[in-house]
Image (cartoon, helix red, strand yellow):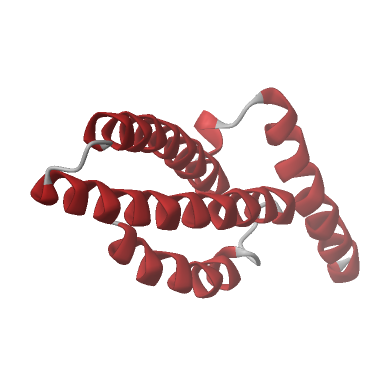
Length: 123
């Protein structure tokens, strides 16, 4: 899974640029999603390394198998939670129905100001 998250992370910048000019999209929501995704990718990398060590310890029947398995389990639960939050923030970018009150106002205020200035130009 750690390897599969790399292309997902690398394509995120293009996806952000594709939606940032759509009305109702908040640049702050995109930035929050990007920042948390960057932290999550590092944690996923750590989990990948722990998993490899754990697999090696199991095959070699090393004495610290139980300890490394517990650490790997805890890291995987934390990683799952962090990626769930990243997904939620990503969903808020395009799905206003799942935004919190503060994010709703933030997303609409940014783009409604742009729309108002565009409407005034047409008059």
